[in-house]
Amino acid sequence: MIHIVEACIKDQDFLREVYIKSREEEVNGWGLEKDEGRKLLSGQANAQIASYINQFPHAEYQVIYMESKAVGRIIMNQTDNEIRLVDLSILPSFQRRGIGTTVISLLQKRAKALRVPLRLSVLITNPAQRLYKSFGFSRVGGNELYDYLEWEIF
Image (tube, rainbow, N blue to C red; front, side, top):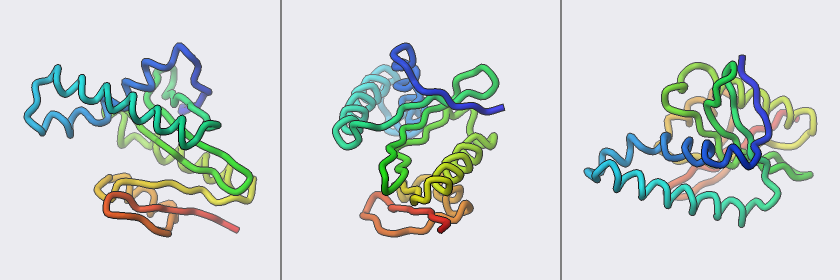
């Protein structure tokens, strides 16, 4: 069973660890020492959160649980005009278990009830592209690194 709860102060280390764990394999391929890679990722995690706070000061930070185990995070920004999925990250050891599918489905239900589009940006190389396309997201723009995707039912 998957459930999602608002993050609180005690979850900060976990939210940061999800970022680090989700990028570790990629960074390990760069030939850095393990400690160097972790230090780099820690700095990137700090920079990412600072950037999100600047861009989305009212964003909701949530922890995803599978049973009683914290397995991922969601950062979402909701306005009168959209729901923006800022970040969805799941610990690598829990990926490909339907967690992302459940989260996207819940967000689509929320967007449909509010009659607003669900939007996100995703790295062009991210395998999650397949998941988003399977849920009916359409590409509405992008750049050399990211595709901008949108889903709306109305």
